[in-house]
Length: 497
Ligand SMILES: [Zn+2]
Image (cartoon, rainbow, N blue to C red; front, side, top):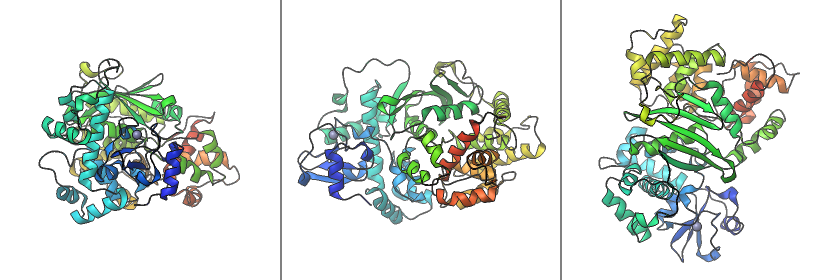
């Protein structure tokens, strides 16, 4: 994998340069420890340092994570370095536990991705500098370490949550890495937490929290999502269990904070992964902003909202339903319809995990909407048929909302569903599949946003698409900026989703 020169890496380490945090890790030969470039410990000698592009690569080389700078708290930017969709899909599956447990194997994982086992190993080595097994193992260790440090979960639950097959294996792993049992790593001073598990997820600054919160607030589905004050709440269903999350911001520490109230600890990694997606925590935002700023049309927008993120959808199916409901109507009207879908078909949430009285139902699953006799909304018949077709497609294909081998393939797969056209497919690709080059060019909000910036151009979708060529591969962020520009207009409410 591509790393900067050792001299460059060492200078970053000497100056504790935060721009390299999450991008490089240093293994120190004399201590056997690996660190983030921002580690407060004294900088090791040049000759003792080896640099790696991922925590897994450092751990693979025999180094153990530093207890001071805590590599598990580095911003997780892995998905931004590789350009391989196969690797990013594999990472998503690994986070969901594809390599945990006894039946799991790299061969089976490769099969799910439609590639050979050897090819998958080669891609991992190329993009992450480590094997799939090492990546899974490192993920388990680092997640367990974070739970030990930041929560009061009993060790048996930590072991399960992090994906260790047994408490014995968890103990052995920690003993061999740190030469002490996991419980010895727990700080005695941590304040007693209330209900739920609270974790901190670091991002690379800047982060425009206000914009992302406003965006989510305008679209919050009644009974499922609540935005109140500086907090975002939502109900969560996963692996047959249900609960809630509460997300907030700690700008002074560059953290997004998530409180999870959920009965099944094994779902924690997948819930955290979804929070990362929804809040776009892994974006290498400085690079993106810099590239988009080179277009004079976008430059003033980037200057106005540095660190603007492109929020993901919590759940692919939920987001796609929203996209269909929102075809040709306003955000407010689409939100009301989504609320009706929930009221009619959403299961009630157990009060034990609620956390906020505004959350009372779960968004209906694809299975539910595929089998229900009538969706029962006051909507054109064609759009109701589209919802039904979407639900059936989602039931039939587990990978419908996962990255395909290319963005074109993902778009084609969606457009094959009755009632999903180019605009809806691009929007789903952007927010649910996280194709950061997706761009719904015919969107009225985008066209209005562009028109505000350049009144002489009279933007049509064709002109906008032409202009957007230079925004690749980050057109989703450009779209987000144009939407933000449009929604700040004093005129009538935008028609964006
Ligand atoms: Zn360190």
